[in-house]
Image 1 (tube, rainbow, N blue to C red):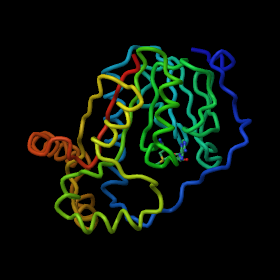
Image 2 (image 1 turned 45 degrees about the horizontal axis):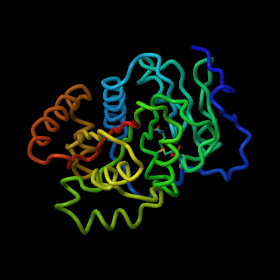
Image 3 (image 1 turned 30 degrees about the horizontal axis):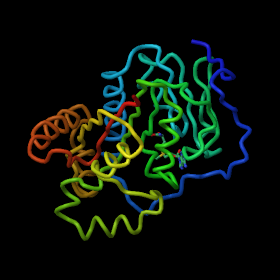
Image 4 (image 1 turned 45 degrees about the vertical axis):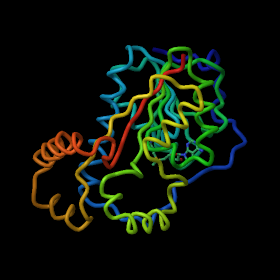
Length: 254
Ligand SMILES: C[S@@+](CC[C@H](N)C(=O)[O-])C[C@H]1O[C@@H](n2cnc3c(N)ncnc32)[C@H](O)[C@@H]1O
């Protein structure tokens, strides 16, 4: 579908905004996360969105980075606009007739009211300066019946409960995220901003020390690792509801 950006009220790349660049966090990431988990988490979000959304949806991906998420939702999108404040992140964005990049911030979306069916925060709400304002803007940009989707790492994850002091130390040295959320925090924010039918899916339960995950990645083929992760999610999801390493949630604008 060809995007008529004028009809969306989108002002492409002419915003007097301060650029935001991804800072190098002090948190070390395992090879398992780097090579297997991120891809898995992203494709889970794509599947979650497909569950709720019709084809040919008009999608706004807020904090889209290089827009690579579009390949996980190609089946549902009619057109896709990836918004990000960072010139560096947008530099890798490959545009085409149904996929466009816009420079801007979640707190002040440069789009007209009610023009989108789906609005996504894929690992970006916790990077924003003002998540409450971001959700207010998200509601404004969505049409009635439109859905918001949020994917985040989980402050309330089971292992962060068990190793609370260590988890807090990691949060304190994390220069990359401005906020850390549990599902309950997001539910409160969504309801405050008048989103209804809020649903969550927590997953990514297999979380081990970085050194152990590095060994697993080196010794076990990725395909088998994926099956092990599915097994963990299945079993532990029943015991520790909403306490996986990541969660995704959705709400609807009525
Ligand atoms: C961890 S990256 C996620 C990028 C992409 N969604 C992905 O999953 O590959 C976080 C993104 O949020 C963007 N970001 C930071 N502050 C933002 C804001 N106030 N509004 C919108 N995006 C923001 C950053 O520029 C960065 O591209």
